[in-house]
Image (cartoon, rainbow, N blue to C red; front, side, top):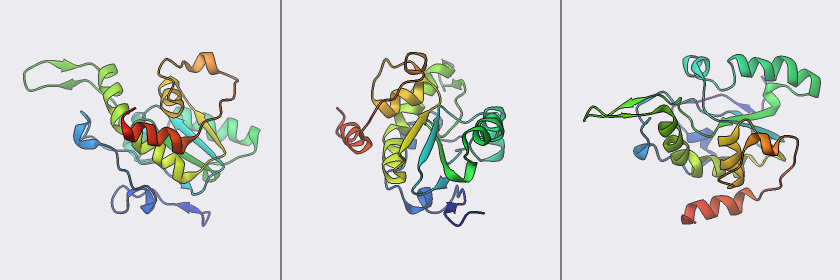
Length: 179
């Protein structure tokens, strides 16, 4: 294992003691669900930001290990010259969304739960990326793109193949202030 790669530690130091802003789990409808923590080298030149963990990721407790992760590490990685231990991997939401049944019998639909979970994790993600300090951040989906750019109507298809420069520190400060 690369000495710069921190092992994924669900308990203990939050993100290896690097990120001081934990997610707002107390406000999240998924607060009692299993969290898949980010991991990788710090600092990292590249960060992949997914939307949320998949079923395989939740079962294994590690991000990007399901079908999409295999595509990244077995196909794209070798073609582009990188390996998993060189990349910071994280998600816009740390928990997998699902339908939530409320005590009054009503249900929160999965899309609503995903939006709420993503909002609760927004400050955490921006602060995390600020600390990890990647040169390139690759959003893997519209939700991830919206969170890291602050462009609320952004669509991954509209930005495909383009480059957008962002100041993560300034964006994190705006979110912190509630702007």
